[in-house]
Structure formats: structure tokens, C-alpha cells
Amino acid sequence: MKAPQKMISTQKIKLQHSIPSYTTYLGKNYFSFLNIEQHFGEKIDWNYAKNGKLWAYNLNYFEYLLQPDFDKEVGLILIHDFIKSEAILKDGLEPFPISLRSIFWIKFLTKNEIKDAKIDSFLYTQLELLTRQLEFHLMGNHLLENGFALLFAAYYFKEKAFFNIAKTILFKQLEEQILDDGAHFELSPMYHQLMLFRALDAVNLLMNNSNIFESQLLSFLKEKATQMMGWLVAMQFANGTLPNLNDSTIGIAPNATNLLKYGEELGLVLRKNQLKSSGYRKISTKTYEIIVDISDIGPDYIPGHAHSDMMNFVLHHQEKPLLVDTGISTYEKNAKRQSERSTAAHNTVKVREEEQSDIWGSFRVGYRAKITHLNEGEGFLKATYNGHSYFKISHTRTFEFSEKSIHIIDELQDKQWGRAYFHFHPNIILNVDEYSVSGEFGKLVFENSKQISLEKFDYATGFNLTEPATVAVVYFNKILHTRIHLK
Image (tube, rainbow, N blue to C red; front, side, top):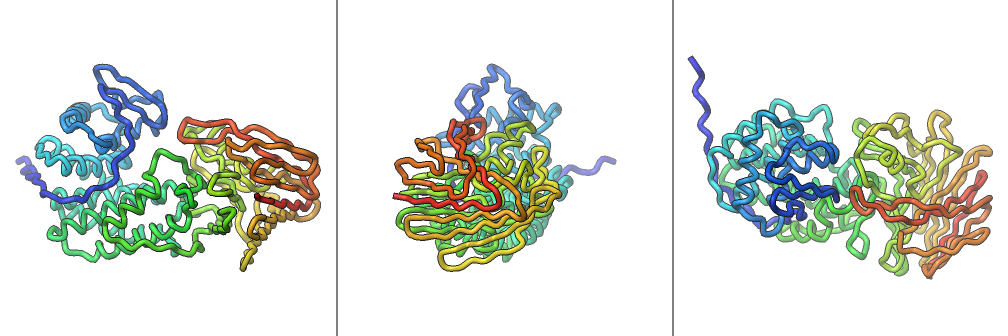
């Protein structure tokens, strides 16, 4: 005899206003993800692969349902068309898109007070599928997204089994993934913003639906979200932006200002954390703001979003970007991805022809550099790391900070030679002479340099978007003194 089918019922849940998504649905089956537009005509191909896997993922996420003024009826048409395509779905049936799509569907259905048995049945089946393929093999933000999806599902369906799984994942993973200074442990501001957004939405859900499940999870989520907001405040430049360190770019996560405002609307207390365990340090004067990266590549078991960027730094002058990280413009496995993760793409030193760390594939790291000594105090920061493949060459970089100037000392062991890179924002016009580069901002003087070369690089302004900019490449033997004098 066939087992009786489970009766699926949903619970009316309440949610405060959240942060709208970016506008990516342009109407009439016309989408724009990662700055690539695609018009499908009469029929959407939910497996469309010609724009890359991440583009296909975004199509299947359905985050566009939450963009400003999205038409309820259009949303229902898109959802039902997706459900009709179930038998042929590919990327859309992977656990990561299932997770995000489930959250976005539940938020859309709740916002528009939609009751649709066919959608609910499909959604429940998808979530049961998710419980059988949780991403323990990838961990990190992937597993957190699984947990957040099951949390939303638990409240929407009033399903204790979903709640128990979600609770176990979120307690364990947030405790591990949120560092003592509030940073997400993949050390990407972009992923930090995404995980904070999800944590804030979870606080919203639990706070406004306390009658459904009894748990200590709400107080735990509030604590973690508050920590994460504190890191965001500490990392945010005065102009409201964040540095594009590791795998980070604009136009993907909600911006810092909106996240902090959302947290305050949920009653969370805004504070500024002291940067420590994340390995980032920020020094601010009336003239400049500088963020220095003295972190190891991490986390050790999932370094897929890390770059070869030990002792990298970014610098703002008078609230405008001066020295920048190149950022990222692709996740595809190609030369551009390799270049954007390489040592030469960051404001640090490349010794001989060796990468600091062995970056390979799209999301892989082999041999990796590690900090061996660190000394910091009022007005200075000094760190040494061993890296550059199997040669284990040590590089020591010292920063000395004053009100209008920064002195950087790069020292290489033995008689090694290297190149120091200084990537300037596209708006910066440079002049160069034998020992310095200068502009309206002031001057960088390179003492003991052998050669200064001005070269072009692609500054990423989003996925698949770059602008030409200038990098000063400074060749030196053993020791280089860089003096940054700012007006």
C-alpha cells in the first residue's frame, strides 16, 4: 500500500521591511546579472549556460522577486514557469540555489500575502531535497545559506524537523565562522555583508514570529549580527564604502550603510569593534585612511575566496580612493580570474617571479604564505611572512604612520630582488621621475629603487566590468623605502 502523502500547510508569518534587492529583472523575460543582459523572448531557459555558471545561478535564485515595486502577478508567472520546468532543471536543483531561492520565495509570498498550494508543495519538496544534500563538503557561506534557508522554511511551514537542522547548523557554524572581532572568517567584505544580511533577516523572522518556536536562537543571532555590524563599522571608510579585499566587488551584497540601518531598525545596537582576529588593521587621520592586511590565507580548509595578497593595503586620501585593490570581475576559470587573485594584483611585493601563495583553479590554494612575526604599537605595524612557493622566502614589511605621511619599509632576506606594486584608482593622474610618482594627492618617493615602471591594469568595478588604471611597479634589491607624502 502506498504511504499517505504528507499534508503541507503554511503558517502566516510577519516580517518587517527588509533591504530590497538590486534590479535585475527588466521585464518581459529580460534579465541582467553580473552586468550581462539576456533576453529570452517567449520562453525562459532556466538552464541557460552561455553566460557562465554564476549567471545561471543568479537566474535560479529568484532574488529579483524582491526588487523595488516588483509586480506580484509577474512573480507568480515566473515561479509557475520554473515549477513546470522541474523535470529538466540542472543548476537550479543544486543545494546552493535551492537555499537562496527558498528564502526569496518565502519573503515574496509573505510580503504579497500569497497562498498557492502548488508553490508550497514544490517548495516543501525542494527543501526536503536540501536536507539530504547539505553542503558539508564545501562548508563556509554555503552551509550557512543552507541553514538560513531551513530556518525560513521551518517558520513558513511550521516544520520542527527543518527547525532542528537549521538550529544545529546556525549555532555551530556562526560560532565558528564569525571571528572574535566580528568578521566572517572567509575575510571577504562582500561575503561578510551577504552573511550579515542573512543573519539580520533571520533576526527579523524570529523576532516577529516568536509564537512559533521556543528557542535561544534569537538571542544568539542578535549577538552575532551585532558583532558583524561592529566589524562593518570598523572597516567602513568615511565615504561609506568598503575595500574590495579578497573576493569582493560592488553590486552583489547590500551596501554597508543599508545593512547598518536595517540592523538599527531591528533594535540592534551599533558599535565599532577593534580589528584584531580578522588580520585587518585600519589607521585613520584627518588626511587619510589606510587598511592593511596582515592575515593568513583562510580559513585553512576552504580558502576559495582568498588571494595571494599578504601585507596588501588600500589607502583613501581626503575620503577618496587613492591606492586600491584591483577587485574581482569574474569567477570563471580563466586567465583573468588567475590574474585578479595573483600577488601582482595587490599593493604588496612579489619576490623574483614567485607568487606569495600557490593560487590555482578558480577557488583553490596550494602552498600558502603565513605570518611568522607580528609587532604593532602606536603609529607602527611590522610583520614578516614566509611565502613565495617552495623557496620559503621571508618578506618583512613595516608601516610607520604620521598625520600626513606613511613610511613603508620592505625587506627581503639574503640578496633577493622584488617588485613592489602600487595600484592607483582610475581617477588618479600620475607623473613619474627617476625615484618618485606624484599627482594632485601628493607624492610617493621610492628610496633604493632600481627602476619605476608605470603600467596599465584593469580595475574591477563589478562582475564583467573593468576600467583602465595605472599601477606603479617598483623594482628593488633587498630593501625598499617608500615614503607616501599626502597634501
